[in-house]
Image 1 (cartoon, one colour):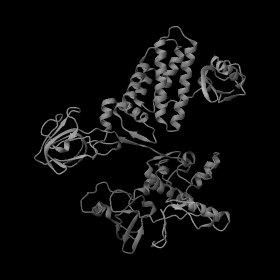
Image 2 (cartoon, one colour; image 1 turned 90 degrees about the vertical axis):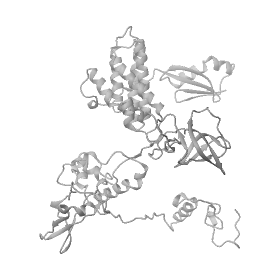
Image 3 (tube, helix red, strand yellow; image 1 turned 120 degrees about the vertical axis):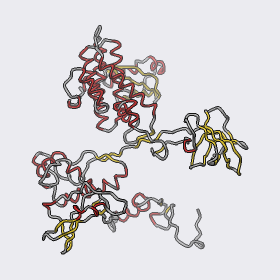
Image 4 (tube, one colour; image 1 turned 180 degrees about the vertical axis):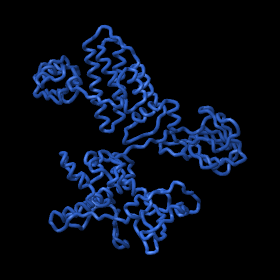
Amino acid sequence: EKLDGTTMAAAYAGPGRMVNSGPFDGTPVTSDKGWANPSVKAVADWLAERAVGRKSVNYRMRDWLISRQRYWGAPIPVVYGPDGVEMVPDDELPVLLPDDVQFMPTGRSPLTYDEAFLHTTDSDGEPARRETDTMDTFMCSSWYQYRYLSPGFAQGPFDPAEAAYWLPVDVYTGGAEHATMHLLYTRFFTKAMRDLGMFAEAQSMMEAHGRDPNGAFDEPMTKLRNQGQILGAERKGDIILARGRRDGNVLIAERVEVIESGTVEPGSRSSEVAGELMKRTENILQIDAGGEELVTIEVPHSAIVHIPTIEGENNVNQLRHHLEIQRMSKSKGNVVNPDELVAQFGADTVRAYLMFFAKWDQGGPWNYGGIKGPQRLLQDVWEIGCADYAPGQTDESATRALRRKTHQTIRKVTQDLDDFSFNTAVAAIMELRNTILAAQRAANVSRVAWDEAVDMLLLLLAPISPHITEELWTRRGQPYSIHQQPWPQWDEEVAREEMVSLVVQINGKTRDKFDVPAGLDDDKLRQLALASEKVQRLLDGQAPRKVIVARGSLVNIVP
């Protein structure tokens, strides 16, 4: 856009590039705030380099209004007597909420009606009135992680010995909105408690036990993880056939019928509209009749609505409109009731599916069809756990392969759980299930390897599906409870692959691929690659100029 100074009433302040700015000419100017704006960063860096200025952050701090005119919340420990305001003495804390209040629609706190709570005495024994406002619930939840350590500790907010052992919190899990709500308040509390010296004794105990206390109480948590959200699945709308009269571009319906897909060709005709119901606002329907724009249908009270799948008299509110993938909401009708799923599939299957169907930190749309995979997994695990395995002719190679897969799975699941990669952990358990089933069919692995594989399968699955694994663990005669057993440890030697795939390239293009023993040195890999019949044919007797080995599994030949 070309600017004309003679017609401009104010300076241009939008995106573009800096001009008439000396060394900054041409620097991009964006709508980003602060250092994210290249122009702001360039000027600030220039000033800092010449020691004539420095970067600073201006915090827009606000007072925290903690009072609430409601019942839920910690009572404010204040009384009002003849001589003014008094704090409740420490030996009378905490002030507890009454549990027999009456909730009335008056707009006033129910505490104002509770005579036993409201009326008390001050330090002189004179009649006094309690404060009936309560504190913001963040006043309690902002330091719950400290009280949780020792809820019965009476000498302070927390036991310093427990704090020295457990704190700081390893992982904080919450939605993205926590960054400006609960996390903000709990960080404030932690820093205030630190500045008041409330962690001093815990820090001394930390040091005595060999832990470095420096910075241990600067932040309440060491890691923040935001979980994803389960979205409502896409839903097709009812296929509607509406007949009536036209009023401009709107069809005033006399009859609206839900029909099967393919029964009537979608379209908008003079007195008839057929297509998928995309939107509904009360009695106004928006139909996809195959054109570029949706067709509007008004359904008056006198119109007949017929839905074959719903018995009795039907109405427009029973019509199902199209739903895109979006947040679950009762008003949108796309809520999935977990109680119904548990009743149909069982809690263990639902838990396994929730862990499996999407990345934990991303979430995704609910898919009813996807639950079949975890359901089959648990059915197979039940069969495996109850099987009376009797090996035939033991094959040492097959036995090593089963043990290798078992220990690889222990390693994979352990690492995935530490990383909150629950979906890939379940996938790894499914792979181990497949390997065990194959070994069962072949009946060629040792009983020791079989028992190890089955026990590890149950232990790895236990955090995900706790009930079926507990039952099978007990049936196998193992000590109660599976959830009290040590977490499995893998043996790196057992988990190591015996064979690996060697990819052979010529000028970066793959020309051959074959298995070789794991652990071969680079010279041996070069020999095997050059000995390949395909490579020999392509080289046609010419000696290569260079043979590069990468990652122990790829050889690139440069003729």
